[in-house]
Amino acid sequence: MAAVAEGKKAPDFTLEDAGGTKVSLSDFKGKDVIVYFYPKDDTPGCTKEACGFRDLWKDLQRAGVVVLGISPDAGASHRKFAAKYKLPFTLLSDPDRTLMEAWGAYGEKMMYGKKTRGIIRSTVWVGRDGVVKKHWKRVPDAATHPAKVLEALRG
Image (cartoon, rainbow, N blue to C red; front, side):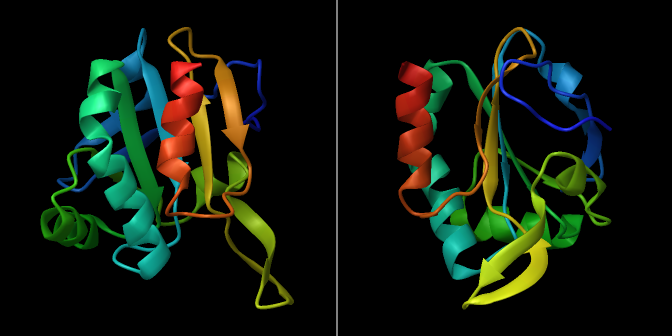
């Protein structure tokens, strides 16, 4: 799978949602898609980020945007997380981190001053034409990030 780069076509992928249904990026042709990668369901930063997208949901829907949250968690964990916080968007599972690795969301990062390998909180905006419009390679603040994404979508 090719890496993600702004101005290039986003590589298609297929992952399972919380109910085990296969979801592909190509299912959303003609729509703006926000693909955001996060480390783990129901952890503080990930919850803030997910709830941020939830709180902006009406604006995102008005803009015709699809939101896909991706973590290595399994469907059961996603179902619990989505129900607990009333998340209106799709959560996908990447248990072996293949997509994350390909899209730059898994690799070397700094954690508490130490170099470690892990999930890199990042977001990719795929435009209606399937081309990557913006790639936030490292999200510094999970809580404020969804608003920054909406701002970018509005141009």
